[in-house]
Image 1 (cartoon, one colour):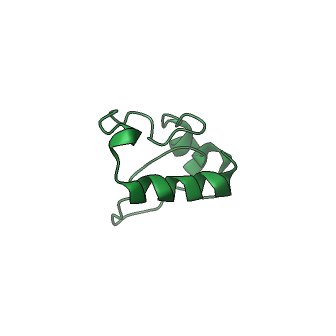
Image 2 (tube, rainbow, N blue to C red; image 1 turned 90 degrees about the horizontal axis):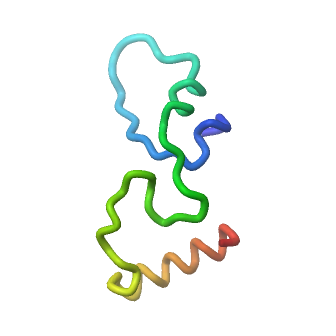
Amino acid sequence: MTAPQAVRRIFELVAESGTSDQDLNTLFAALTEDFQGALDAAGDEANMPLDQEPAQVNDDLEVVRGRAGI
């Protein structure tokens, strides 16, 4: 997604028949923006504390954080 309005927004894309939307910026702008640097998306439940995640999950998160400069 190259639309600036799509940054830090989580959505589910479902293919349907019919005409395609031409103005995706309006669709993205209506979505709730995720918090900068957050692991969960906006609206996600805080249901798994990091200290209870498997070691592999935390290792993977560290790799991703390093790549993102977080």
